[in-house]
Length: 303
Image (cartoon, rainbow, N blue to C red; front, side, top):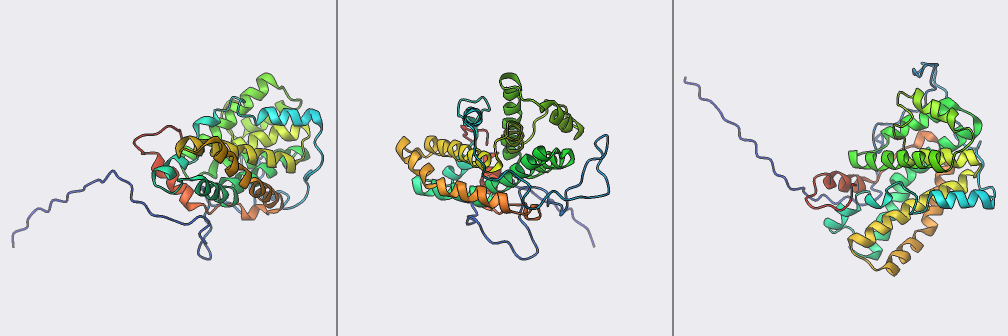
């Protein structure tokens, strides 16, 4: 019997197919949705020279931090300066996928923007960054170099897309460059060496949350106020992106930010209390919009 040649034609469709996934969608038992690699149960310490040892010692799962202690006026002004929109980290150029969410009609007014941000803070980067912020802050206060190195390395893995990874690392790098140049901090050299021992030069970016936690711990700002300030700045920057993209009026933007005030506080409280075994996220709609943003035809933002 004669054999014929079968030709297979592959057609690539460049358009994204919308698959709406509600924010905070429960994950089936036994599966943990994370923003990257599945987290290890116990963070490993670094051996001398930066190699990962076989003995694994977990970071403190609760307590051990500075909590919600008072912030001095001198430290408060530093924190306000570092998290101000004028601090040169380039936050204005990142939307964390909101640009694609607007394009898909998922964010279209003040209320949908506030709900979208609520999900990010409770279930997405607000959750993972908050927990890593606390881990890094506590490690610096305790002089725990292995614990800080774990936070640096784990933060690299906790991003689902290339654009959110860029968003975090580029801002973290810019933050530390500006702090070193204009706000030199006693003890920074030690932690620069720890960063270098993870296999990267000092100038290589670290996650924004870890960078801010390091600086806050070095000046003695308690973890609670420092984390709340960081999450508020994160939310304010993304609300500003939403104001430009929807577009919204400035007053509506402030109303959206005001509606998120209690969410920021709750997210900070949750991060302070959460065990690191629970590190992960379930903001699948946010991850999806970030992915499709990578190939979105017209873009104003880098993420």
